[in-house]
Image (tube, rainbow, N blue to C red; front, side, top):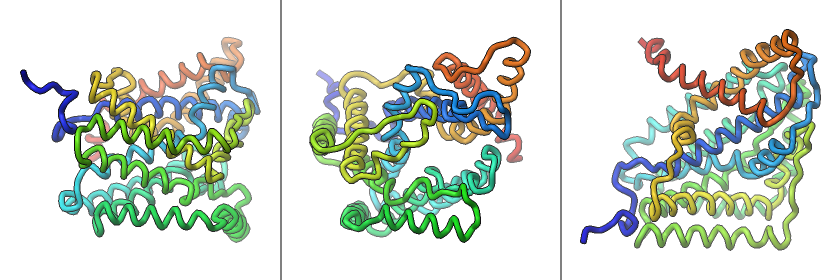
Length: 360
């Protein structure tokens, strides 16, 4: 009898891992929900005075509460997972191309806030995309120079450094730089010391998935159990988080700023990713057409969703509110309409091949 897919020792060479697309797609939709709800909280008063501190409804509150601790970390986790798909010798020819790719994205996301934010300080704020690119470049360099052992050693050094008061030092450096720049609303929002662990965990899980010994199902089961074990200390001794309905950004990183909270984020990402990968390998490919499409084109969606909301959807919504007497509500149905229009716009950009045309 032929060997079935669930009994195969590993992923098919060169095969697409649909579970990764699914996870990216799910979280890009959740990120749009969070970002659009945050915009509607504030409604960018410089653009429109319609509704400041517009509170989210119950459904949005529950979804944002679920996403808030680990969402930003998962995107980095999955990107680092892919980085580990090749062993050191196979990865070396692609290293410089990877660095150029990260540099281009760093430049793009350094520039993108100028199309969205209403002040120079907010536009120059050090956000998650900038942190991700630096961390991915660091992991790629460690893998290029030393292989997986270099990443393990770098992770060990990172964990040892966490005995130092990194949060206090980061806060002092942020205040000093803010005063020097004379930009009161500039922030060191996405600290490298908070995010590096998610990237390292994603890389190591990816290496274990692609190159570990034994059956893949057994490897992912062990990874899930490890994640569950790492989650226990936070369940026993950790503190939770709250999402303020009228200001959803206030406690965005409160869990990650504690050691147990950060450990719980890594654990949750390991459990979620390994469970999805295990399901795909033992049950069926993890494919939901719309979510997986969003996962495949998550970079396109992410790169355009904020500017599209602020400069297209915002004025259109203000016009509809004025003409049709439909007040703005920070509600799940309203945000779903915004997301649907954003995905439609991303699909249109993709289908139009405008990027390829402009490159001629």
